[in-house]
Length: 386
Image (cartoon, rainbow, N blue to C red; front, side):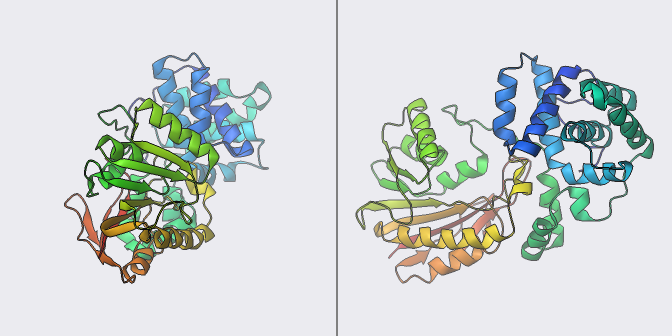
């Protein structure tokens, strides 16, 4: 993302007080040193902050933006540092550099306000380094991975699977903030996930199993269409979230079970449809998970592909003749999409269904959505049990 790109709600003019920057600094330290997740730590901090709406938006911009742009910011800062700085100084330097490089904040505002937000003992260091960043101007990035601020392996994997131009374009797109989409019932759910449910042939009264259901967005949407939904998940914490969403949305037709989708405790052939919205690397949804790019390991792709295959194998046995199997993942690696779907298509009992209409685009025997300003990336494959 170039420094010319401005974010809505963060004008970069220094109008938000240092308290917004101080909150962002504290959350970033928790993310970097304590393993906190941005989408968990930030809302909790904001809820206790008492900040005005404008400052809350600015703090959110700083936490999410700095977390996404960590590699690019450190590439700019590290040559100016004699030794690695302590975590609060590192966070303050990233906040200041982000404003200077990405938000076009005037130097006097970005430097002075960020220095004021830093711990007193570190202010001299933060001031000196940020003034040098301001004097240096736009960085001359050494490569695309640094410019876009992703680990090398993610850039290389998506280029290998999607081609250079497409991969770089979607990586650039996922550096922009995610848009919030609310369903008619008020539930916040990305459009790509809503389109997965829209692509399912489910009628009122059908029995549907969602074997990886948490947090429950797709399961509650299916229940709202009149289906009887059995929502499974293997993690007890996520089961609590499923139950909370069921109660919040009054999804009485949804039964929640703590169970491993690879070994579903259901009678064979009982379901009219089965949804396998499988755990995946999430490389199509990185815009809304700013720290995920730094957490996921390259080995996770093959490990998750093996899990996805097991889930699909188990799901086939739950289908009645004529029932529909739907597989979706918010990633774009060939291993987790085309290769897993090819395995399922070799099953004698499954007949691939054609891809849904636009905006889906044909992708192997299924369909995909590339990340865009409107929605996350998603791959979708559908079969009918013959």
